[in-house]
Every structure is written in C-alpha cells, then in structure tokens.
Length: 199
Image (cartoon, rainbow, N blue to C red; front, side, top):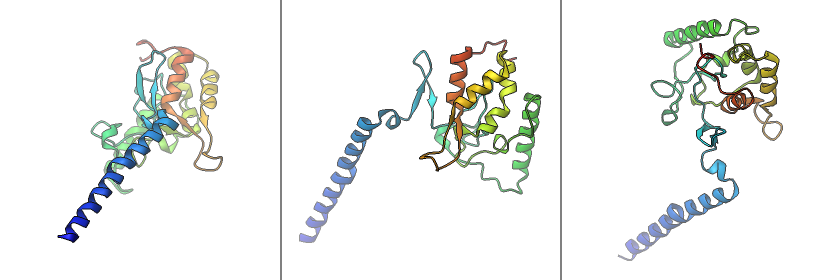
C-alpha cells in the first residue's frame, strides 16, 4: 500500500508539473516575448482581415499573383490540417505525370519568363506547405505578374528584390521570399487585381 501511495503521489506531481505548470509557463512566456509568433504568425491585409500565416504556404491561381510550390497536402493541396509530401518515388509515373502537367501549365502561363522553369515550381516540399520561394523562382514569374497587373516588369522585380529575406543568423538556410507577404506587398503598391486582370 505504501508503494502505491508513493507511485500515486509521483504521478500527481508529474502531471501537475509537466501537464499544467510547464505548459502555462511556456505559453505565458511566449505570449509575453513574441505574441505574434505564439499565435501562429497570422498575417492581416490592409483592412485588418486575417489572410493566412507567414509560416504556411497557400495557393494563388490568379496570374496577377506570385505562385508558390505545388502542394500534396490534403485533397486539393495547401491543407494545413494535412501537412505531407506526396511520398512518390523518383520512378513514380504519378509524380512524372504531375510534374509534366505542371511544366506545361507554367510554360503556357509564363510565355515571357526568362530561362528554364526553376525546379522548385514543379516539386512539392516535404511538408507541402512551404511558404517561401527562392528569389530566382519569384523573379522567373515577374513577366506574368507584371503583364497581369499592367505595370512595368522592373517595378515588380524591384518589389521582389526588396522582399528577399537573408540567411538566418547570416549563415543558416538560403535567401528566400515569402510568397504571401510578397503578394500582399503587390496589392499595397499596385492595388488588388480586378476580374479583368485575372483573364
């Protein structure tokens, strides 16, 4: 009986410390130190509406917006509740067919794009929700976005270059562009596209 009481006490103390006290302290510190990140890095538009998270990629079909990497998350892609890669192997015919369709679509939608299609625009990330592109992949889309918005390509290119994020701590990772933040910057500078621009 004495051993059972000791075990019950240890269980109760462990439950209180690790199941209640620690989560409350960690949550409190996160809210005090960096509340934006603690609440999901939610991004708002100029009207104060939530439009997404800077940590989670989303699809953009309108030609006046930059597109991100393909997504295998969920049935239609970009489903934050079903983060996953496609898990297709390099010899998979499904992967080859999907990539071939993406290449054909990108070539059709971007007839004035410079050079070959950047590989990341036809390959999904491991999570299927990568919110970033390399600067090269974003710059490759500049002619399409500029034409859809009826602005000079150099102005859109400069906007991309202004949004490039450097390596973390100066040496971790690669330079990148957050697609959602870039598209919001487009709307702020050039206005939201109209239905005429989407055609």
